[in-house]
Amino acid sequence: MRAPEPGDGTGIYRVELPTSFPVGPVNSYLIEDDPLTLVDAGPNAATTLVALEDGVAALGHKINEIELIIVTHQHLDHIGLVGLLAEKTGAEVAALQELQPWLASYDQSIRAQHRYMRETLLTHGVPRDICLVVDAMNRRSSGWGAPVNVTIPLVPGQELRLGTRTFTVLHRPGHSPSDTVFCDYDARVMIGGDHLLGHISSNPVLTRPLDGREHRRPQALATYLDSLGKTATEPIDVVYSGHGDPVHAHAELIKTRVEMHRRRCERLLELIEARPRTAFELARELWPDEAVRQVQLTISEVLGHVDLLINAGDVFELQGEGGQIEFLRSH
Image (cartoon, rainbow, N blue to C red; front, side, top):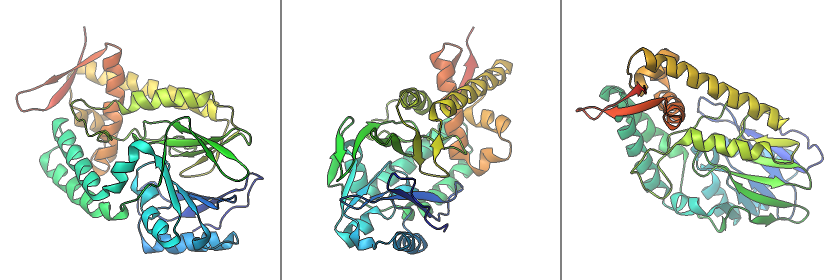
C-alpha cells in the first residue's frame, strides 16, 4: 500500500488499497468533514482491510470514526468491504437507489450476473470450454464482494450534504449500470469512481441490467459515451478516480477517449467488411493474446463498438441455427 497522499486543500485524501484484479490497486477516499466519510472500500480481503485501517490511521483517524460510506458503483473491488465496515462502525451507507436491492441481495445478484455473462459469451462465439473456465473464475472471485445494506438511497440530482460541502449526485452509467459520480461544484471537484480514469480507458463491461430485464443486450459503450459527453461539460478542475492518479483537464481527456473509440469502430468495420465474424473472432483479431485471457473484457469491448456500428446502420447481426450471432456489413 502506498501511503495516503497529502490533501490538496479539498480535504479529500486518497488511500490506495491492494487488489488481486488485473487493474491493480483501487483508490478509497477519506473525506475529512462532518460526518467523516469514506468513498468505496476495496475488495473483501483481510489484506485490504489492514491496508485501509493503516491508511486511515496515517491520516490521524480510526476506522470506527467513519460515519458515512459512499458507494460509487457495484464492482467488487469497490464494494467488497463496505458491508463489513458499516457493521463494524455503524456508518450509514449511501448508494444509488437502483443499486440498493442489488447490493442487499449480493449473492443472488452476482450469480445472476455470472449466468448472464456465460450465456452472452456462448451466444457470441466463445467456445464452451472457455466459458466453463470463466464460470469457475467468476465463482472464485465472487467472494471479493459481500452484501451491503444501503441506508441512504440516492437519486440523480440529489444533494448530499456534509458539514462544509455539498455533493451533487449524478448517474453516469456505462462502465457499469450503477456508476455514480459526486460533484462538489464549490470546490470544483468530482469523486468519479471508475467513470473516468487517467491511465487507462474505462471498459464498458457487459452487465445484467439492474432491473433484471434481459430481453435485449444493454448498449454499454453507447451509454458510456453519452455519460462522458455530459461529464465533459461539468465545471470541475479535478476528478478523483477509482484507480490511478487524479484526472485534470477532464474535457480534453474525454475527447481523446471518444476519438479512440471512433478509431476502434473503423478497425472493426474493416474486419467485418472482409467477412462475417462473431464477437469472439473479432476479439481475437484485435487482441490475439488477451482475447482468451480476459475474454469478458474483450467481448465487452467488441460488442460495445459493434453496437455503435449497428446504430449507424453500417453493420447488422444475424443469429444462426446454433444460436450464435455473427456480424455482417450492411449494403
